[in-house]
Length: 120
Image (cartoon, rainbow, N blue to C red):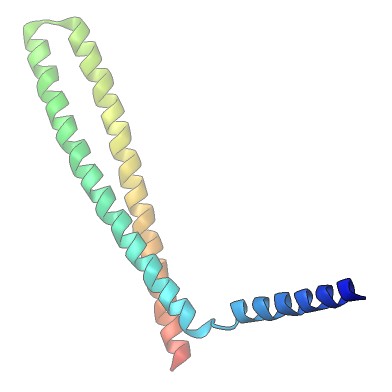
């Protein structure tokens, strides 16, 4: 009988907890949207910084490539070309990630705007 009472109390507490977790949907959505927008802005800044670094690395690799071609060092030229391909691939990946983050930010801003309209 005692175990049954504990089980009933535990299930009642669990039900109340799950109801409370679902209740604050009005203001919670806007706050969550703001958090997501800040996170997207942070990701965008990081991606732009990565892109600047990748472009600087590509410029440096191109300089090395020209220098090695002028010196006639074929092994170094092949290594520089491989490094250039890798850096360009990384640049394309970062640019793609930047576009995705911008798309997510637009969606989050739109969601926040809709939440504010519903609140009025």
